[in-house]
Length: 259
Image (cartoon, rainbow, N blue to C red; front, side):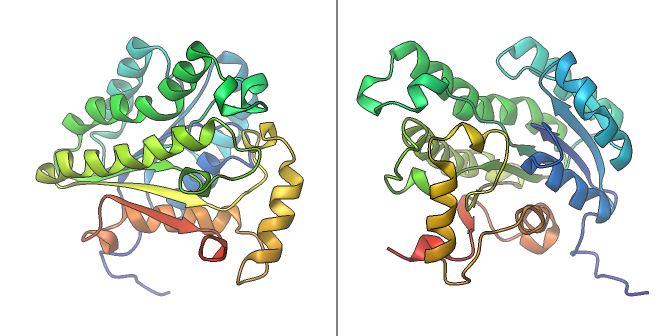
């Protein structure tokens, strides 16, 4: 049996992972990898309906599952407090949540409504700041906070629409949070995966075309896998990444380097 050095893996680390939707969700992949590496996990899903659907997944992984509508600040406060109580503190937090009104996502950015844009920004971006504010007091030994971005934050990707500017704001938020939380030894990152078939991604228009394009242009000649996204995220939450913070890190088979 191979024994890993203490700085590798997530042995006995305590993590809160938000956004469990199904077996294809990035949150599920990260939770699964974190459990394999020895972490103790509390995961969240949106509501009672989602809870019924994903409870078997949580049971299979042996993780605690809580409901959390991130739009409701009081509910988010209760979720963070409950997770910290169940785990005895927090070492890492994963924010894998994004939303935009479908009709506006499929339209032009210049046609988006103020209400729709603001709501998408609140759920997909600002909620990460709120989550950080609530979690930081429970990360007494430092730790890691991760959110999920996409190349559309840096480039104008066809059909990504309003989510491009929102993800750009999210990546900027990561940098400011890294500066503010650094004195507490809390590291902050955005992971930027290539396109992967999740429920959230299915709302993007012509998503199959996007995946085919990414596959054809990537240096590795393929798409990234859920396991690869999860392993990168787990690495960032481990002490092996203790000298890193404030970065957007791509895991996309190299497609972001190709014009």
